[in-house]
Image (tube, rainbow, N blue to C red; front, side, top):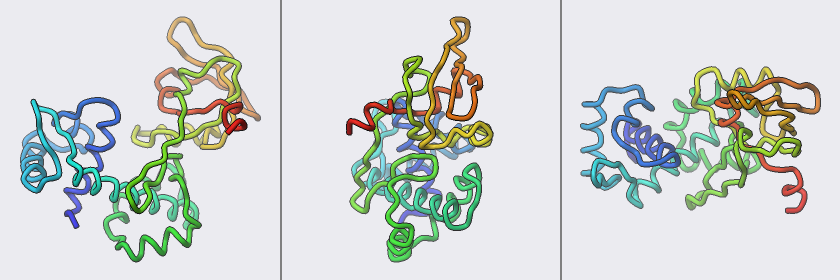
Length: 221
């Protein structure tokens, strides 16, 4: 099994790759480490067959992707345990799971998954890879892209922005919440959003971190 540091790098590279080419500077920013530290670790990852580095980019090999998805699987199951069993607030479970994920053996992970009744997603709505590394991502668009007046359901939210989860919790915006965009500012793209219980404004930046799906498409499926 890779070391804790290697696992953190593989997880970060996998997630960063969803938003475009991964370069060392993005890894340094995501992990809060220096450029030279990233360079040295990438050399080790390359040597061990986890990444390739064509033209300054960092790409996971098949082995690297399998290892990254294994870490993500452990992380998201740990998050479910921390939230559902221990009752930790959803804004706290990500950091705590970063510690717990490295201590879960395959046997303990399988038992924990069964105990939790095989959850499909983490508390933030992200899919949990299965034991074979398959990821079943629910389709959707960001709330910033949603059509005004169309009732939608929150599918997932990004958990890596400081203070975002606390803010969304205060508004009652969790996966499964139904929400409608009532108006969009022509000036800055800010949204007037309505849930079953209240109305409030959201910046375009925050809305872009929330993925939703039209209720009509959910009912059709």
